[in-house]
Image (cartoon, rainbow, N blue to C red):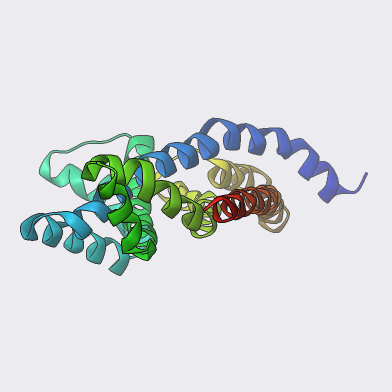
Length: 226
């Protein structure tokens, strides 16, 4: 067996384990909490009072205007200077959640705004409250439109979790870095890590396509029944 292939085979279990224990949970948790934060932020910008909307706009402006790596460094290395100490994984989770929240809020805000005003009027005409109209009429329609951009955001997040290695989270990429430190084979190990990310992204892309097709069929049925 060639040396490079043997090295990749020997290191694969460690890389996959790091991905299973850290990369995947970090991705799922960050995306889940980020979506919740994004929805709250989007609603605050669209329907909140002026001071709340201004705070939401400021949050989105700061997060979208600064690099994710800098945000992670501020949280993990900067906050201890004012007495806030966080372990690496919670710091990464907070950083990614804030980042996803800002970007997803723009997506959610756009898709909610794209729902025709007539849908609001129809919901109110049958006696729905604002909350009922939002949860039963607006969000289901907006969610179907939001699937493609939010799916792309999720796939990007899988790759962006490699930045957590910079704040010592032992995820997939840092596992590769640690093996490189003992084997002195950076090219082979980094290519292997890249291939793992590529496989994950490809699988998620295929799932995204199926999800989009399913929502497209559902949307067609709604239009046919309208």
